[in-house]
Length: 149
Image 1 (cartoon, helix red, strand yellow):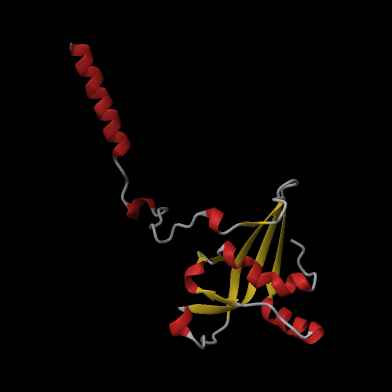
Image 2: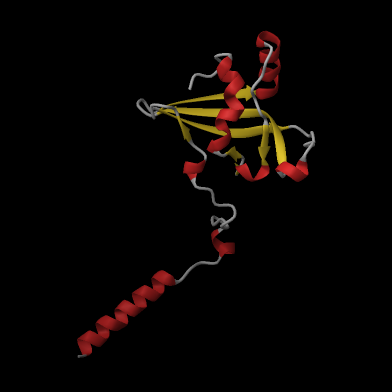
């Protein structure tokens, strides 16, 4: 009986030590729930699943949206950093993209543009754009063959 009590006590002590946590002030590496972003929401894949793309916002315009009440808080993105990873070779490519100048170039050369650079503020997490807006931001660069994805 005493062996069982010792085993129970040691189990309780070990589980208590596992449950003890260090305060956030001491660790400084913890993030709040609002700051947490799942990496899968930031990465988009090409059609064949051989490449991954991630877009980081480098610069936004100070222009105010015309219809804030209807579409919510949005920012106009002017420069992005594209990171493309080839999954077969693990090669990573990075490149800065000035969306504003590419949009102007496409309008001059082809007399149209398809970029919608207005992105909801909620769709930018930790400086990265959610994957739902990747195509919207790189459409003109893809049309001019600056990006092959």
